[in-house]
Image 1: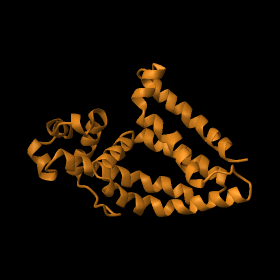
Image 2: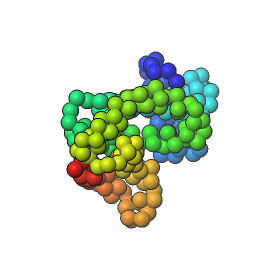
Image 3: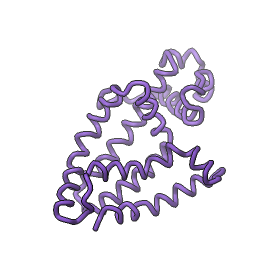
Image 4: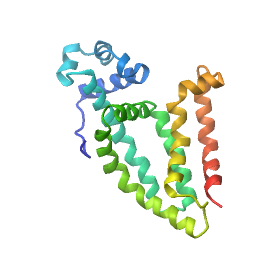
Length: 205
């Protein structure tokens, strides 16, 4: 997966938006090429001209979605601001980004199950190297006694888990809590407001 992707044509953009909408609602297995073509307002033959298979289209949607948002989120970890503000901004931005792109966690899970090496190439290029300075900042803060004595990798994974799990586990959460309709959206909005303080209080002394 290259770091730079060519800008899609107007027709490709219509296909991308239609496919993303269908994939988000029905997943890869439930989506149909004819339905995507209808939503993009193009003939099915035109859809197959651009993408020979549903899997190829899914991969393209995944690439564009991840490439669009992941670097922006990770870059927050290297801003020249206080550790508290950095963590706070990261948590809020992470939740807001997934709110606007709820299909991304599902794309990542699909890729991990189908071809982990393909995702690994992207993660190492776009995320891995940029996370290390933040981990080192946490190590230094721990040595100085400013944060809890916990491995920085555990802290980072805790932050990611607290932010992304509600989106991945949405069906289970809705079932357990009896959420219907807009209830889950209100739950996430409440979480966006409360979680930064919870994370900060669990890390900083």
